[in-house]
Amino acid sequence: MTLNPSVGRCRGCVHLGLSRIARCGERVYRVDLTSSVSSGNSIMDDFYLFISALEQELGCSIEYLVVQTREGNGVLHCLFNCPFLHKDIVSNLWSRFHHGFVVTCKCVDDISGSKYKIGSYLSFSQSSFFVGFDVSRNWFSKKGYYDE
Image 1: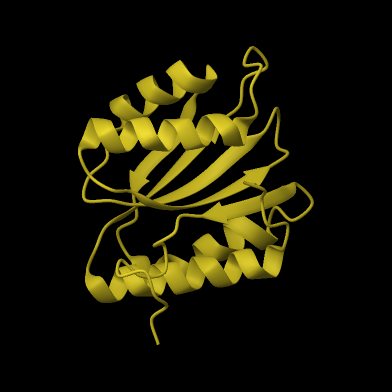
Image 2: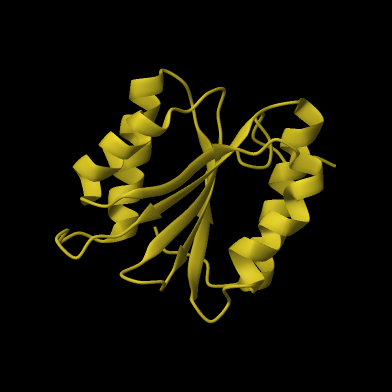
């Protein structure tokens, strides 16, 4: 799967997804994953393996938005929509798949108030480092269609 390189579209995806999550009263977690020079694999290839393993470990589906940047050796700024997330599990799995570290893993308390701030952080404030982004199939709607 290739990343979408559009910064503006990324910001729109953040706002639409977080708006749906806020309306539904669900949880969202902000997670920053670092890349490692010792990993011979693509950071995005390892991310998709990591997501599958994380879903198996937690026993639930995870909807996500991931932004890849050129910071350092590469950083993935992620938003995960799932009922719960433990930093130790995330750290152990990411280390196993990509030999990288988890910098941030925290629940976003005020989704409605934070959506513009998060959208700007993930897209515009780092635009010179921006590589691209991807979203899971149901990021916009758990039912698989766009909310109106």
